[in-house]
Amino acid sequence: MRLKRMKNLFFLGLANLLPGFSFVDAHRWRLFKQSGMNIVGPCTIYGPITLHNFSATHNIYIGKNVFINTEVRFACTTSKISIIKDNIEIGLHASFETSGYTIEYVDSKKRSIVDTIPITVKRIWISACITLLLYISISKYTAIAAAIVVNKDVLPQTIHGGISAWLIKKI
Image (cartoon, rainbow, N blue to C red; front, side, top):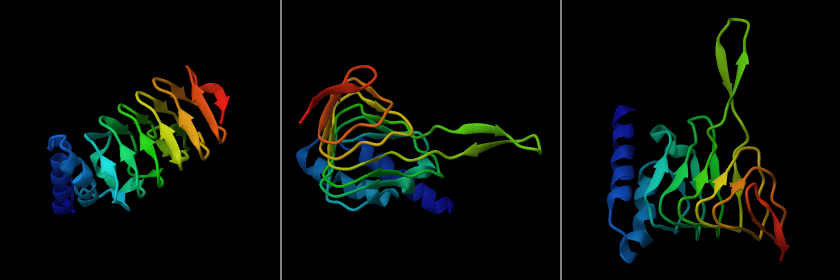
């Protein structure tokens, strides 16, 4: 187990430290896959990808033909799954905040963590500097503008922008 974790950290660090050349960017996904991420591939990852919990790489699923720009953050835990389905484009500094939890009182006077619903996206374009919060659903053929916080469901075939995300236009 310890050796596997060291291998995962090695490949994660290598993928994040390699320079941004077109050849490297086109094959960086293979290194992230070796680090434990479930990547169907092929995809383009500019990197680096920031993880809140290094032991949660196996809970990140990335589909085919995905484009991930630089400084994307996944805040997933070991008990939750983040899914990026096929044909997704993610702008730089996007943040997938799936690390939320609920603290509840238990008879034994201990706190416990109750998992939340993962974020699942399919066939959308996510622009730069956005934050996706918990309990949201993003429908197909959607564009999300830059520098916004998505805290509610996004309808299909729409463009959303603003703080908090609001409907700009139906497409």
